Length: 281
Image (cartoon, rainbow, N blue to C red):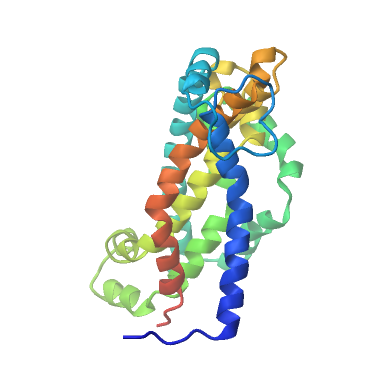
């Protein structure tokens, strides 16, 4: 059976889509090739070499020997895991409360929280650091996690908008049956928030995994450095071996791979979240 012929604009669309994909893929493929290439210079070969001329795991071995990659990876996993769990709890509870709850000054409180989105992060760094320091959380995992957990208004707004599209009849029926608010949230609404929570998790994992600025400010001990801080130290150090292009590429690949796996596993929930959020009562 012959399929329906595509219109001309579809061919144009796919053509530019392929071009954009190739442009985005070139530096990634170049980095992957460089990480497996036994390079004897301090720069990646130019013009780009998309297949290793001397395939080897030498760069990865040198990263494991010269860089505390296990420590950095462990710190990043701890920060990401507990940061995502905390964000799921805080954002889902707050979003449900602002969407279905009835309490005084709800609109004003919501405006105050959302106004946080209008303030650049750079203007908040000093007061956040002073509060973190006074609480004794410098050079701790909690010091890296808590400021982002308690000041991220976007996720609260995301969960509120998702809950707004869920039927309010479910809430009224549960109240008439004598259910308390937390039980209504946990047993009725929380299971329906799955797509939005998955989207939140993907965004938060990417944000925490790639965060450089705040961990660099709140930690000054190499034992507490996260992966991105470690990569920054590794690629900008004074030792000549730290500038080796193959090793930098290998270290970057080791930092990207876990994040790519998480995104590949959860990306379908992002599309599902967009589709479900469009369903009205």
